[in-house]
Image (cartoon, rainbow, N blue to C red; front, side, top):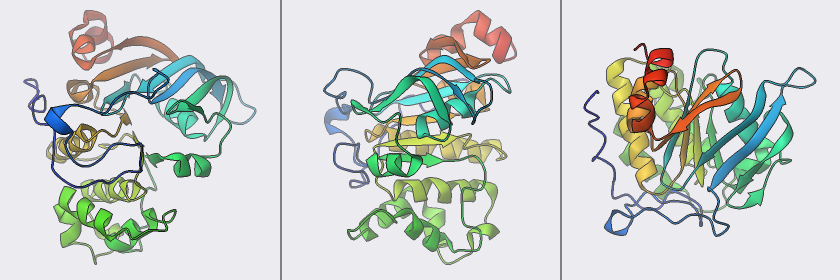
Length: 275
């Protein structure tokens, strides 16, 4: 992947898969991405977040993470750096004692995760992210729990995005491979028609080939205008597809830049990429 085969491969021609105001699963006209929120700030931003779990010590320290429409933003760093914690803070799963979280210009700092889903946040946790006893199609149907419209077109679009899921739609999700399970998890999140998609280590435990395939699909979704925020353990590969990247160390921003900039940074390469 050193030659970055994804650089010029973004785009598909599916129909809308998101809420009004979010991106779509159709390529933007002339390859242009959707505009920024009217406020001029990033579409999703956790600004100067300080906080942790319950009454425990703070894990994040004035940490800022943001994602624009149509952008892939990745969070990388050493084990215990607070990467998944930052993602959970954005999704409302832990206390943000200082700072704020805003989505499309709206302060959502004090909303529950359930309320944030209704606002347009799709979140795929690293583990326990599918219903193993349910079929693939039942898992996707569960993703449409907040919807009151006909979601069959959305399911068709997800089957177009992940053809293997259509082939295995009547099979128990627990019988699938690790990579296929991740596709189910991402597909279920897309069934909510999210305005932003958040992925916590989507390639954990999958083979390099499957990782490349998942990254391809993530790129397709981002190209349609949906912001993607991703925590990823495969730092080098993640930086190759990242429009924006954050390196966290001990819950703090250590390095921020484009994926290319951080790949070329000698300190980042030496400290986090093995030279």
